[in-house]
Structure formats: C-alpha cells, structure tokens
Image 1 (spheres, rainbow, N blue to C red):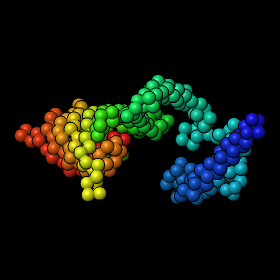
Image 2: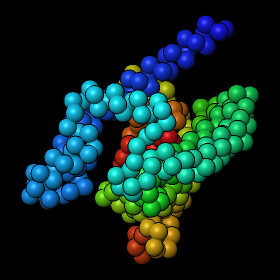
Image 3: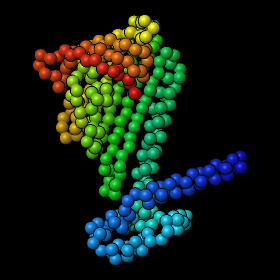
Image 4: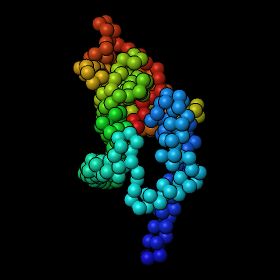
Length: 297
C-alpha cells in the first residue's frame, strides 16, 4: 500500500512538472511579452525603456534559467506579483478559494442529491432510464464574472410498451456575454419547438419542454431503414436578458425514417404540427418541417 501511494505521488509530481513546462513553453512561444503589454507604444518608441523592463522582469536571461528560477520560487510558495493588479498572485488566489470551494461543494451535493436517486431509478427501472446532464463554464476576471454559460437537462425515457419509446425532456440554460453567434438558437441547435421557422427563438436564455411517443411501424424496410411515427408536443423559447420571455409551442405528428427506437440517432423527420405562442403569424398556425430528427442530448 505504501509503495502504491508513493508511486501515485511521484506520478502526480511528474504530471504537474510536465504541465508547468508545457504552459511555460506555450507562453514563451506567443509573440510579445508582458513588457510589451505594459508599455504599449512606448515599447516601440524607446528601446532603452524596453531593455530596462526586460531586465527588471528577468526576461533577458536564457529561457531555461527563467523556468528554473520560476519553479524554485513556486516550490518556496512565491508565485510572484500580478502585473495587472500589482498584488501577490498567491493572495489573489486565496481570495478566490472560498468561492471555488463553495461551487465545488454545491456541485458535489447536487450530484449526490439528484444523481444517485436517478442512477438508482435507471438501474432498477426495466425498459427505461433517466438521464441528467449539466454544463457550466465561464471566464472570471478580477472585476468578477466576465462571461459564462450554464445549461441543464433531464430526459426520462420508457420502452415498457411494445414497439414504443416514450420520452419526456426538460432543458434550460443561460449565458452571459456570449460571443456573436454563440447565443442560444433553438432552430440551429434543434432543442426547441420543431415546426417553427429558422432562428425564431434566439437569445441568452432558453427553456424547452418536449413530450414524444415514438412508435415503431417497421424495423426493416427494403433492408435499408426503419419507419416510425411520433406524436409530439413541444413548448419553449429563447430570449435576451433585457426582454420578456418569448415562448411558443407546437403539437403534431412526425414521420421518422431511421433508427426510430433510438434516443440518440441520426434520423430524417417529416413533422407537421399546429403552432401557438410567440412568433406565429395569424393564419399560419400549421407548418411542415423536414429536418434531422431531434436527439435528446
């Protein structure tokens, strides 16, 4: 046991050393240094000032000596000083630890609270399963959260009836300062009411509820594909943070060509349905779409 522990500890140390060396090398390969970023145009106008700052930061020494000196400082607990704020990096790091720890504890708590019961239900539920998915990432700057995205979904599927797959899916998400084209687009992402037009629902907030009963008509037609039909109900939408929620729904019937019984699967879907809610012009309630079948993922 002791030998195994020492082996794992040595492997972790070598991994951290390799990662630090890789990051250090990548930073050095990027054109320019912290000196050019600090001085701006002055770095071009005054080579003497540039050389003085390079000496101050130790950038005039060979690269391998810079890495060795940096590694030695880190092992002593000295992470240097932030050139952006002028404060010790370690102090800035410790200020963020409580927030990071709180998020980690909450994530683990939610995983235990929701994941274990759903996992147990999936294991003992013959002919069905429950799938819970979550996603969160962002960019945190000194002033606070700069940009980020949070998404979550719950899928409940049942195949307890012969030749049928019943699916209930709930999904929601929010983003902050999304890059152009990175907003939620329910038509593009195929996670919204299916018989609405292109880009009918876009924004930085989104919700979607879908209920679908996929009925297998034929397993094998001409040895090429399966055929099925699927009555469906969708409700959801997307909007921006500074506007009211834009929501719409549809109810209808879809013809599916492909692996109809698969929750995940590339199928072609011909869907006709009645639309209601935002984004529907008077007299144009009925619509037909031909698209790749929705995969609940």
